Figure: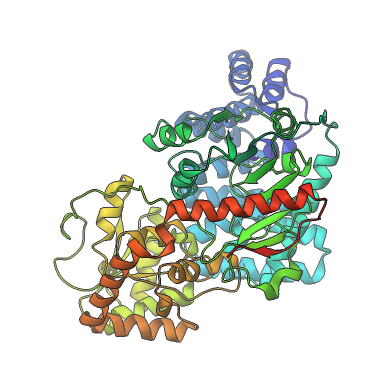
Length: 575
């Protein structure tokens, strides 16, 4: 997706023949051929800015980040007023978690190309990542102003359909961003060549395909591994189409082994992927990506499968007419919202979210000192990414620290500037910044083990923890949530209902803060919650992977039966 976007943004100036050849090969996905041609161009002219830009983009796409950043920096130095180069460098820096520097280049690109409103959308995620709340608020006000003064097809370009789910923005505006994005996807797909259609005889088994960039060590891959393994092979022939290559992880090997057909489509464009899906005779096509990260949504807009489903990876309706169904539950998408959603909604109670009952935690819980925690004192924890932390919620967390002497707030490390901003915000609330602690990266088994050291997990609001919420519950840590106004902000409430702890769902911020304080001051009440959570993990539906898989298979079977009978997709529920 990023390569295609940057390719469209390249200036129209003529490049030398080798550079032009390299750029063309890059746009068509031939990264090795592109690199060879671009290196020839640079051998002839080491200062060629277009060749430097193309080589940098190719190297970043190959995950050769240091080399790629160096080439992109040289391109920007050669042509500092070229917005395209600034965007490429900014996105690469953000990918490498050099967020503050990334933001400088992205803001420069917006100033250099005011006629490209889509560049403004690139600013929101770095601002959220940095917890730079003043500038987040200003960006939201600009977006609201644009919504009042510009037609929807223009102002919605100013928000990314993935990042908008985390912006504390009115949900009606979020959904308009998604509707307009879906229309743009459909328009691009309409310009692609027609597909070669064929009729496949109905087989004994339904051909069920999952498309994702996350068949690797990634939260979506971790959640769904057990689901894939438990699918009934007597009823379903299972396909995976992987949009990103092998990351070499143990988890990737496990996922590959779970499918009968595991197809690497990293180098395919949308039309080629759609044709491959038709040629493979897919009956039910499940999109695990939506509008996140690397996607080929245009392939879905070409309608390569009779039934197409939005599930698990994108926590929102896609508002796309080419997606038939959204798998949800009554908490994250109540029936009162059905009329505002393009997809037919399927309720899969008690929670839509798959979970893996085979995930492994390290057997030994580390000491508090080894985890970087003080030897004593209450540990409030939130391992959600920093882009989900909002000003009002952080203020409530600081009031909790003030009210509970010796307590600490344990967060997940993100980037140095975000950590500095959060500690500065703590100081502004009169809290010693040293009481805000950051957990560094750890392998997943060790991370799950250290999570047990937390006393209470504090969820975020507009965009909850999803996999991180499941992780806390799996580790036996009670989780407190204050639901937001849309799917992404209601996931933790869905999980708590499925694990039998609905009393930890707070209706307001005041209730959230009050309940957190009560639990921090009442050790016996908190201990009882932990004991219930431990028992419920064995008996309640949230982590019963095989039973969950059977329910989801009933969903797929009903979708297929409706299609075979000639019915249009419509809302339904599975008991």
